[in-house]
Amino acid sequence: MRLAVRHKLALLAALVLVGVSSGFTWLHLTLSDRALEEDLQARAVFFAREIAASIGDREQLSNEEKLVRQIGRLRAVRPSVLQLDVLAFVDGASRVVASSEPSVRLPFSREDGNEVREGRTVARLIEGARDRYWELIAPITFDGTVAGAIAVKFSTRRGDELASRIHFWALSLGAASVLVTAALMSVAIRYVVDRPIRRFMAAIAGTGDGTAPGTVAVTTTDEFGTLAHHFNEMVARIARFNDELLTRVREATGELDRRYREVEHLNSQLYETQRRLGHAERLALSGRIMAEVAHEVGTPLHSVAGHLELLRRDIPPRAQTDDVVRRLAVIEAQVTRVTDIITRLLDVTRPARAEPRPVDLDRLIRDTVELMRPGVSRAKLTLDVRVDGALPVVRGQSEQLQQVILNLLTNAIEATPSDGRIVIAARAAPAGAGVQISVADTGSGIAEDARGRIFEPFFSTKASGNGVGLGLWITAEIVREHGGHIEVESAEGRGSTFRVSLPPAEDGA
Figure 1: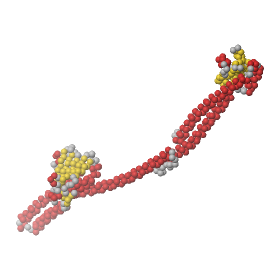
Figure 2: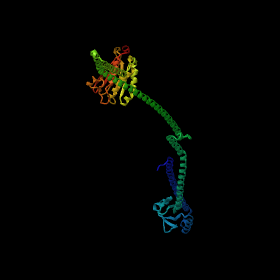
Figure 3: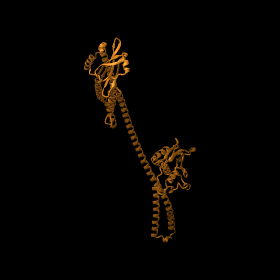
């Protein structure tokens, strides 16, 4: 069973009250019993001495009839006197002169008699099976001489009954006082302790579910008032902390949203750049193919055209009929037409050559790296950028140079396992020779027999279906078109480093 604090305090107070009240009641009753016994003893002694003093001389002491009548009157007045004997001392012996119970003699010993002869009163409390009583023997003195004694058996029944009534009322009043005090303390605890605790519990519950302000009214100056003051301060601090936390969460959410939009923008830029690069690669591939086709088809066409001219010259005039001349003209026209078609196809697939312009390689490299950041993060790689502060300006096409960097970074990402490292660096070449750009990875490296063919078209070290082998060939072609050169340093198991050298603007103008 779960008890509330006020119930525990009331129970504890009741136990303390019961203990204290029981202790004081026991002490009071013990002292009362002792005082009552002492009073009864004193009354019995006084009674015995009073009777002894009422016997004035030896003649009266020896008058048995008169003493018996006196004993009868005393017992009628004092019902507590169970037995009364009058003794006379004659020649060192004691003789019962008169007794209320002649057949029963009070059991006084020789030592008791000696003490009485010396003038002292002997008294003792006898605890019987059914009752208690005092046995007393007091000396009868004539002219300083002990002539006899009064022996009394004095009942304590009335005193015991009085003590029982005192016990009953003391215990009843003690129990009643405990109950009344416990009830009053319970009410006091309810108002002094339970009500403040309930206010605190309500404030705590309101703070937890947000349905109340969560503060406690400060109505006292005691410990509960101090506790309420500190509790309100704590709630205020928690509220401020929650507001600050909510503000920070909103700021972080806004920053996250802004970063997300930036990543989306970078992804869209990367997608657009890759789309344009793919288109450029397809154009380059088409141009390469058309160049090969033009070379392979052009030579026979030129041979056909030459032999056609020789045939026209070698035909005798008599054989040059209108029909022959017409057919030769048709052949020549069709050869010319095929040549024009090939020329137009080459013009369409060959990328337009724009006017070279100064290119800020520092900005170009950093922008390209930002485009590749999402891919680097997905691959769980580390990308370091090390660009010198002042790079020489080069002239060329920024889109094509960006394609060079994108191709090299893409190859590095695909060749490097998770937790690997890629470093892109750019610095001024010695002696003003332009700019050197390097892309290094910690991948598996390139086999020695493949390094010599790495820049050939349609050559790839990747698995089938993962590339057509044009990326590095296009990269090398772009670098050569910008007047530079590209080289690779690699070893199996140690990664690869591609280095691109570009001439300065004044040399490439």
